Image 1 (spheres, rainbow, N blue to C red):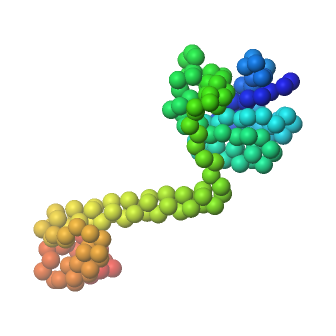
Image 2 (image 1 turned 90 degrees about the horizontal axis):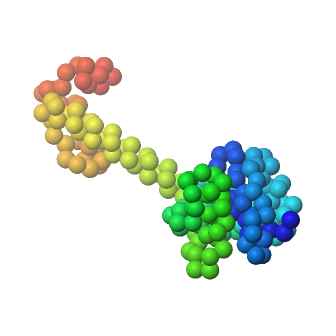
Image 3 (image 1 turned 135 degrees about the horizontal axis):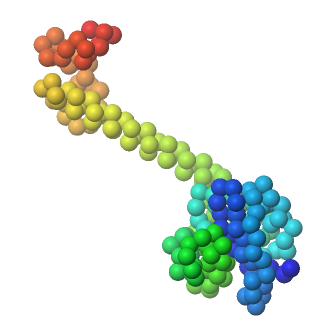
Amino acid sequence: MNISVLGIDLAKQIFQLHGVDEEGQAVLRKKLTRSKLLAFIAQLELCLIGLEACSSSNWAREMKKLGHTVKLISPQFVKPYVKSNKHDVADAEAICEAVSRPNMRFAPIKEVEQQDIQSLHRARELLIKQRTALCNQIRGLLGEYGLVVSQGVHRLRSGLPEMLEDGDNSLSFQAVGPENS
């Protein structure tokens, strides 16, 4: 089996493969489990492999280590090549077709360090969103008692202790909580 281009539809557990030869004739249509994918790719002759850029595209690094040429394609660029209804077999064939196009735009394969930094940024972004939501909730609850705090985390942090210590703040015992009274 001489595969020159291989399209792989990535998933969580089951992967669909579509391979073509030099003439563009389909020579492989295969379904593999996660545990068997890399072993199968390792036994193939070196070829061009196309994958959709997604959260599972870390496979590209592993396939590249095996010597294959691996290209990541944004899903929006694969969609026009889907010939029938969207399903894994059609997606793998579309990826195979799209990756072989000469003017196709590809996404870069991230190194582990790049993914690490991206993970840290995403975690920090989530924490900031949660902090903002909590500050807005506290500001809203205080507003129901007639207490106004300007926007901004630093204003809430500096203004809240003064409000809680003020005996004339109109906050009830249940609102303040026993540890703050």
